[in-house]
Length: 229
Image (cartoon, rainbow, N blue to C red; front, side, top):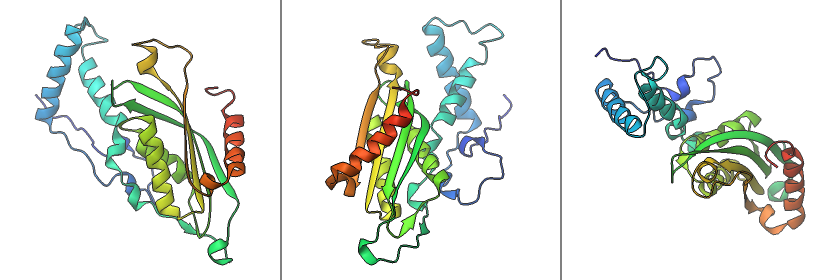
């Protein structure tokens, strides 16, 4: 069998927007052609056992396409949030200096539940009270996706985003709000059709200041209308 070019860089990105993104691809995964062929064989057996016909023009390459899709959907394992960098602010008031609350969202994300390997997807809202550092807005989106594109659970994903931002920014406070639809509850089990899971995560001033939490949640919920709510 001819060896396939698997192109194991993150997401097969080939654009010019790579400056400052080395942290997204520091641990590239490699799968040899022999292993890939073996995995395809396993998937062929599984899909056929489930009842799928693999002898039609539309399905004969499905085992390969499925494996490729799973590989691309878990590219978050290749990044390292510890390498994310921030920019200095112009805050000159010492340790008590605060820059106004920064809130970004909705940030769409797609993840795979580690319990059933079914997708869960939704939106993230990220806020922080800057002190000496700020972060590029596009990096907030990339950071969310770094932790989403892997096998995970919503609770861990939110905690990882919160802790990564707290470490990078040394901010006065960090807030993360996630809302997601879980296909593992809609396509199997109880088969809920209208359920949305919402989780919140607080650090610093957000933990001690209920008015700050309320401001963040009001903005996030207002933006959420028309999405999952």
